[in-house]
Length: 461
Ligand SMILES: Cc1cc2nc3c(=O)[nH]c(=O)nc-3n(C[C@H](O)[C@H](O)[C@H](O)COP(=O)(O)OP(=O)(O)OC[C@H]3O[C@@H](n4cnc5c(N)ncnc54)[C@H](O)[C@@H]3O)c2cc1C
Image (cartoon, rainbow, N blue to C red; front, side, top):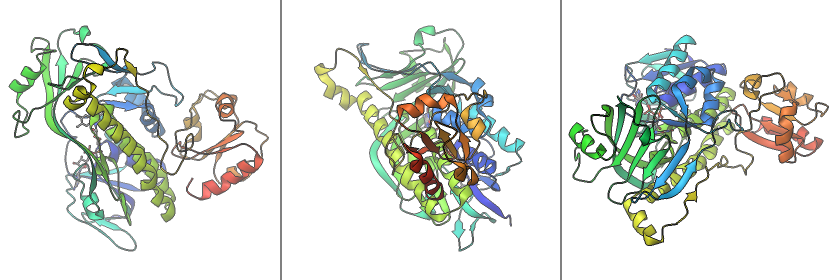
């Protein structure tokens, strides 16, 4: 029997990232995975700055960056070509130190994650199908391996979620869509760089420009199409014909999915946790399913490293309301591009396009700006803030003379850097406390406030 700190069940992007985060924070980790090879069908192709920051924290941003493309954003277009809504994204680096929106190719990301696991000597066992999970007072057992904790990053049909109990709460969206990745063999610049949501009552569809020659089309299916959910290339080409034909390129991969909107009722049962698709499912209209899973991993990793029961209980309390806001927004966007909502818009559809702003919810239990990612400027020493801090607490100070040695003694990195002044001034603060997962958890307006950071570090953060 192995004697690990954490068993991670599932080597998808969330399980792999969690294992890297846990190992970076000094835990012994073992990943158990049923399949020999990564999932072959088309899935995620967008992630955001917060997710890139998590990859940065495990030393992977530079390996992943060449496989990405900064996204200009998304447009929602009516059947007559009118622009209904514009969700363009900034093209400059944002306050988190990365671009707001990246396109990527999920297999390239998964390959980079697996290489990093191997390079760091993290135990990964493939071909292990976990069929039962047991826990007792001292640990968890799965497939004969034992550890103090188990995190099920085991996808939508999670056995970990089943073992914990409670099931999914269904937020009401369920639609069948055909998803196609196409490789262009001749230039089709006219397809454009923006993602397009075709708000067509007859056939809602999505176009996304991928990395390199890859182009994604997601198209709603009617009930009589692909009734057995099997992908039929002839059907795919007939649905794609509006944009592309076989003369433009080849079908790389395609699948029929039912897009769901669900949140698990219980994310923890004793020593068991769930993260990623095991804990929540969203329609992909905001490109946030994987992003939410990576946020779960970052939220849980430092709490497992500390291993305190009450702190571990904050995981679901913080993450579930946060992901719910993304899912509910994605469902609303799905409503906008589907038949009923367009009919509702009717002739009153706006003449001027609506500008959509990205949502930025706070973690459950916090009020913004707390419970949101702290900024990541480049410091005077030339390093980005996170590279300087590592997986530790950070205290951002307006003045180096502020009394904060008691926080350094607790392991916090103290930073009094001019690059932080504008942000602290915006919040009328002389100091800020940032958790190891980069979430802002306290602001201080006076020295007493800075002294109070010690309690935050001892409590839930
Ligand atoms: C069409 C589509 C488009 C999407 N677009 C985006 C996007 O643009 N941006 C975004 O952020 N998200 C997107 N998503 C969502 C994203 O792909 C998923 O949220 C993400 O892949 C989930 O990762 P995961 O690691 O949680 O689960 P998975 O990738 O499903 O991994 C689970 C792993 O657990 C293993 N496993 C399961 N059970 C067991 C067991 N009993 N024993 C051993 N191993 C087991 C499985 O084999 C699998 O490898 C999209 C999804 C779809 C379908």
